[in-house]
Length: 544
Image (cartoon, rainbow, N blue to C red; front, side, top):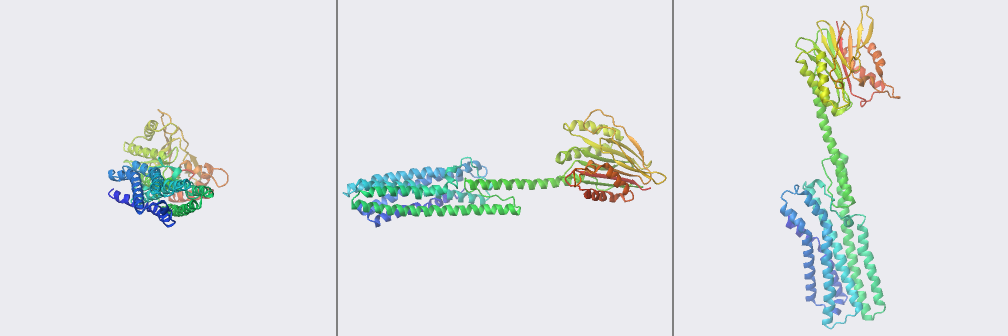
């Protein structure tokens, strides 16, 4: 990444409050006379400033070095995602170590050099004044400076994460494998601010009071002057820390609000940048996980819609035209795809294969089996086999392919218009209903019962056929159990075959094309729910 050097200078410049705090302490010591009393010259002040800047720059470079290597060596950041995530997560901990070492090195330097310089220049420095200076130097360089530096490092890393996220990198998903929540946890931050700018200065002030009690006037004035320096630096540091914490929280809440807005508007492609490895980061990760899951769900919906379109394409596009006969098929699945199947296949000799099948189970597995069944039936129709031989073949094939416990019920018939007869096999399917009309016009319902078990359960079965005459006015209704097993609104009573018989007798005069719609209205009135089961109908009527 060519902007790595620029990012380092941006990071270094963001540490300006440390220099400001150092210059503030120097200025106050000049104004209150402590510098003069210790014999500190401008040259020594410049040397101190130079050393301070050198240590801070060195700590900044050591802290930033892993990021520099990432951006220089990783041409494709996404390919090195895990490595960069680790470096970013480790950045606050690395900053704490480097600035703590730099701060205490500078504090020790001041504790040794300034009293030594004062003694060498014949300036009086009592043990009370020495302890006061040591406490101030230790607090300013060893506590306040690292605290400010770590805070700015956390802010910088969060801004860098936000920048990477805006450029489409990492999609806001950053690892928490190496995160140090004892540094970045939002619940710890107020206590750290209180510790650094409240408790520690208060303890030091208590020590100053104890030191000033038995000291002479010169010592007391010196100690009180150092109190002013301590309070000024503490207040300044606390303002900087609180301001940065407030701004960081404002940025985080803004990104979370944006993510919630995407979630509310259904824009699941977006991601929330994980700016900190704390509880807000966990919230952002959870929000990203939710949007990722919802996006997968939307993609699955598209896949299901495509699967439903494909499955609908397997069903007949239109009813065949047969002299003296009217046919109508209908299917409704409880899920996007289902395991019900109906078909009519016109053979070369003018006869028609009629099929209604129900695959055990629902959803994708049943739909796949249904597609396999449809393909086999279409292939068998070209061979012009007798339907009992076709049923035997289907049974053996399904025994080979279906998993244990799965099966297919099938009603398969061959309509022979020339002889007005129907040759059929019922393999475990719910009995189709055939309305017969005798010479006197009286109507009766014949149930076409299953004579063998479903397909795919038992090998080496021989399916027997039944021949039924189709007289003028006869109507055949083949269906799946989604009709008779429809549950009512009250209780768990099912619609049942008895009600279906009664309804069918009442609608024998209706055109076949209207029967599916009328039956759906009847089932809806009974209390049918679309999620009950797949529902399939196949109606055949001889008009003359």
